Image (cartoon, rainbow, N blue to C red; front, side, top):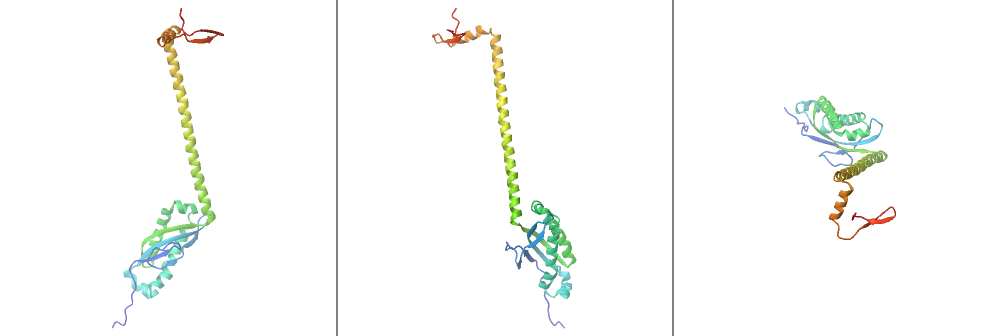
Length: 221
């Protein structure tokens, strides 16, 4: 004879550790506070979706009676311990720059540990990293310094480029003058210059200074 029915929820449940967020359909908890490899305090916001293994529901009921007891005594401690222990393997800066790697490593460990406790991890995600104000300012200053250095480098390269362009133009101008002078000499030198002057002569007699005397620009002899 059946005296009563005991129910355990095997649908996907959500645990949200993020004091700045409102994601999830279950109760929210404060974000997890851990220490990085370089001993920086960091608050880590995470969201976990998991479900009970229906085939193991009887075992879970026999030990914990309710979903709440199982979640509070098994699932949440696993999440807290795993998130904090893995964060200690990374520097504070690496937690940001290697966020995906960190998330994947935590996810793999949670999958393994949940299975050992008759449950299944559906999804794990990092929702937020929050560092101390001093550390955040230091990171911001470092990023700004890198950006400024890169801008200065680009400016220097631009100056070098423009200088090189000026040099190349001067070389080209000098080469043009050399070729022109060579052409003039090949055409008779001074006589060629006189001929070119006569071609543009308008009838007046242009003068120029030579050895303190004013002489005609064109030899009229």
